Image 1 (cartoon, one colour):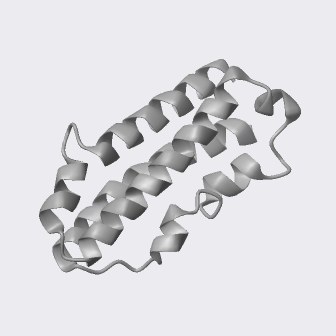
Image 2: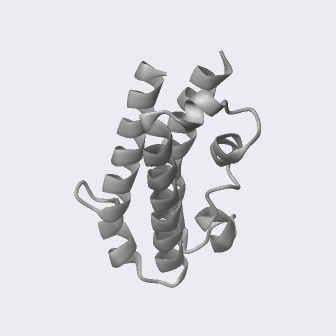
Length: 121
């Protein structure tokens, strides 16, 4: 089923961002434009979430709006970490990846909401 695949793939793909951001902090470089990171409609999940294959039933579920909102926050926060990393503000960027950091919280909230949608979907 496409719906379940999209959610599972998104959880995995978004989970990889922490590793990519840690690398950016270490090297001071990232291979993706900050504007692209910030754009929640550019990743494969965002394209699906806003695209024509998602059903009206899925869009009208209690989960859709919440996931959409948290997906935006996730991308904005990832872009903020990346910008800090390439600007040399490594400590601030790393703090955002800590257990109670802004990125970690945004990522966890998105994952929790996607998993709830998957369960109920």
